[in-house]
Length: 257
Image (tube, rainbow, N blue to C red; front, side):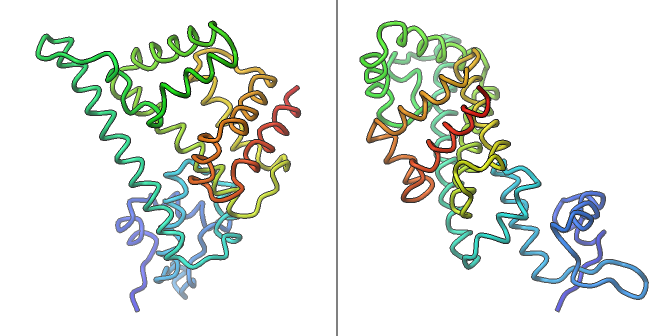
């Protein structure tokens, strides 16, 4: 069976020696054993655990939460990897659609093509974006339409890389919360606050204005009331994730008030 020193594992994984030492110190990734020469050695099990850690980091899970998720997930590795793969596949397809939309917009601005208005925002939201916007306007009035348009304009002003990063951040924030739900975290537990703070900050960034606690709690109500939102969240996180997420959001908003 192959054994790797810290330096060898660093070269293999792309993770720095300093980071591997830190993971050891905080108990996130312990070596299989330490030799008489005081070198740390890692085996297959540790390599797989490091891959899990890197997956969670990519999904935006705070470092202090990763160990808890790895210890609590209680499912076989193939099932966990399958969930990671599904999420990454969705992210890749969304990114490709966004890049295509941006490339077409650039071509139009350079006089190299035309683009229908309806395609300007293709890929920025679920397929029923227009329906969701109309539903929000009906519920909250005409000013909501202005806010939606301002939000879109802000996204476009970020440029190609900025838009991709902003959208990826939202997906990562949502996935981190879904992982907490799947790990058995209690919705109202303040331990979820770092994850909710990230989600809350992302909503404010999308709005391009502050998201007061009352507004954040209002977003939770929207997620509950619209069947498509419920279907989306339960699809992303599993049955019951919508109720868990909205309960967590409201509890977090209450703690901020």
